[in-house]
Amino acid sequence: MAWDEWEQAKAAAASRSESTQMRLNQLPAEGSGPSGTGGGSGDLVVHDDVLGKLGDMARALREQLSNYGDHARVATFEASNDLFNSGLDMGAGLLQVHDAWNTKLATLKEACGHISNGLDYSRSTHRKTEQKLVLGMNALDGTPMTQSRIYDQIK
Image 1 (cartoon, rainbow, N blue to C red):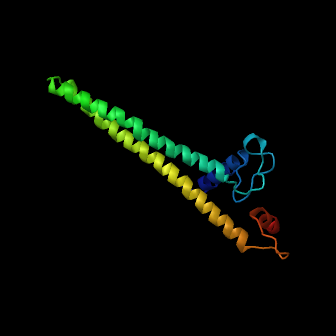
Image 2 (cartoon, rainbow, N blue to C red):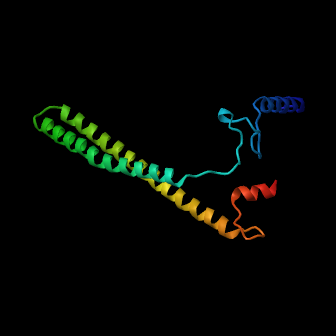
Image 3 (cartoon, one colour):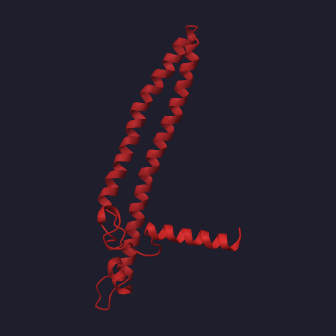
């Protein structure tokens, strides 16, 4: 690539980033962003009760998949055996459906478990981090320094 091509590519990239109002290493301007919400305070907001409910839902879904998904596994296996023992080739095909069902069901249950565990871990980690920030930083008057108060001090 020649030097003038490089300069043209840089100029084109700069004009694209200006047109899309790309901002790096800073909050978006007020009024920009989704639904005109602006940058807000910039703090990460985690609602522990919402994460807990989502984790509980994922755990409940995993249990339901274990219970109800197993009915289909047993039924397809028995049907495939009956068909195969009756001399029908469809029994082997249904056994393949049974195996595919088991694989997909196990994957789905594992995904629900990962979601539930991930949310539990996020809740625990966030709680510990927040506690460390609150307990570890106090203003001169002894009041705890929250993340938003720290941000205000940096501005």
